[in-house]
Image 1: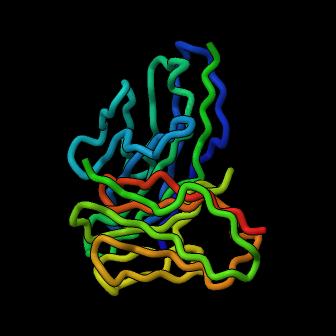
Image 2: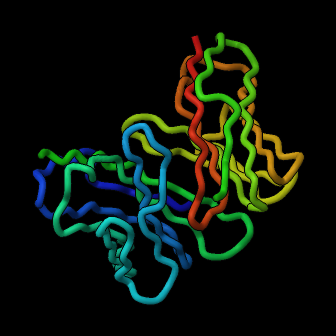
Length: 115
Length: 109
């Protein structure tokens, strides 16, 4: 079974600080990787995704993530956070083939950005 | 825009009751998922379905069942609700770039 680990449960940063959230997955096959964000009181929404190709992917709002296959990692980064980035962030993985695709999420990281 | 609609935002049920949570999508997505979201535990997959009448257990299926009689509708059933099933329940469609419903906050008393 596939699983996803997010190492940081709660991160507190000041505005303009740089952000890196860790994500590791365990799955032997080819994967699709995602970061989702949940702003307070809102639906989960997709931040960025990796299917294949360039391992550095860019998403919305200045976020990016790097897929390192040898480390089974897909860490999320942002050079300079804003107060509006306060939210919960979830890493997720699914297999890249087959009709019965299980989409598995990590436990989430709550990011608090202080003004 | 894809819409994923869950039948209730808030639900309060008594221990032992049979509870039905409904989810309807307005696109032709094959995959549908039920998760529960608890603080510090993230989203845990209960069941998923990749076609009508097809279902697969997720990571925490105990105490739950599902039904998918039509492609657009995926129901989660709590056979006999217990207090430890108090949670936020999220329905989603599509394994790649998932779309989520607004969630149902279920309280079992």
